[in-house]
Image (tube, rainbow, N blue to C red; front, side, top):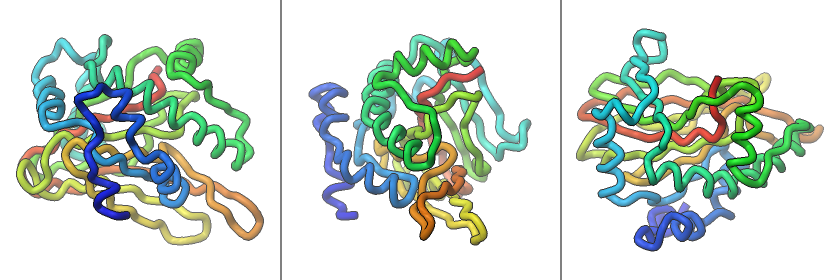
Amino acid sequence: MPAANRYSTPPVGQGFEAVVAALDWARIEAELDAHGVGLTGRLLDVGACAALRGLYGEPAHFRSRIVMARHGFGRGEYQYFAHPLPEAIAALRPLVYARLAPIANRWNETLGIAQRYPGSLDQFLALCHAAGQQRPTPLLLKYGAGDYNCLHQDLYGDLFFPFQMVILLSQPGRDFTGGEFTLVEQRPRMQSRPEVVPLAQGEAAIFAVQHRPVEGTRGAYRVNLRHGVSRVRGGERYTTGLIFHDAR
């Protein structure tokens, strides 16, 4: 993709509504359709990234902390935010969801999946809560040298939204090296296909949680996707993840 499109800076000072509206949603949708992942360009400025990173050492903001090695998830750790969510995450989550819901519905229609998603995040979370999924899922992840995240899917219950978003809060090459966000697509009767996704500080990747539709000679079929993070070679890498469904 042209560098000017990917790295152009949205009008951060005008509020998150303007930031999200300024994104190239046609390109993001095309990338999701073709690759299962779309890049936003910068969503958060340096100050907003630093503010979110700074929350990691303040336990009052979180409901739980996970050390990956204890569960076989990899190395590193992450914490799930408690309510109220940080301002940036609370603002971005419903705005991005509203843009993604029509794409999610189109994908499900293509694949013959009955589930349809309402137009607003509040409506969707009400469905999650009725299904017993009431715990907030946005999280803050911290990786040090030698840390990594094994390939996985973030489902958290029977009801899940098919996209999620991760925002890189550290500067590659200065704060850390290595640690590339990675998707692996498991294609039927074919070898798996990796996708390494380079991110700039403050930039987000929107990606498929579980699968995406692919057009074949006999119509559309689904391919499964898992995501993870390659080994951090040095420094510290922080990201925040916006998952749109709540957890059991």
